[in-house]
Length: 90
Image (cartoon, rainbow, N blue to C red; front, side, top):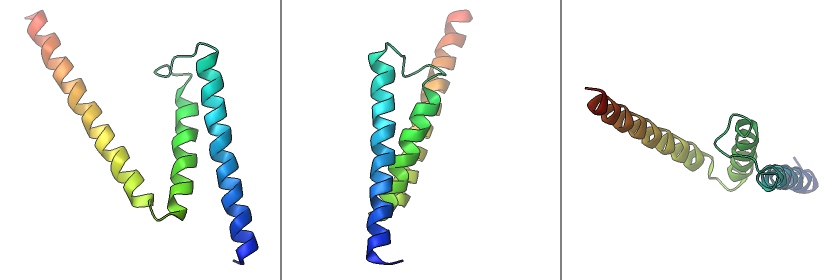
């Protein structure tokens, strides 16, 4: 791929990320809840656009690692809350 094509591809990725950010900002400004199911596609596009751009900087593996760590932390929090609930119920 030539330098001009690389620049065009890079600009397209920047525009995609910018659009994802604007959509998320508009959702929040309209009173949307970021933890709602309606926000999931917005969050998914935001993460995907960022990850696609991050690959150009050699950070693709770091993004995957971060997502894995965040998922593990979320699972641990769910397990903790489940244990607390079981204690309250018993």
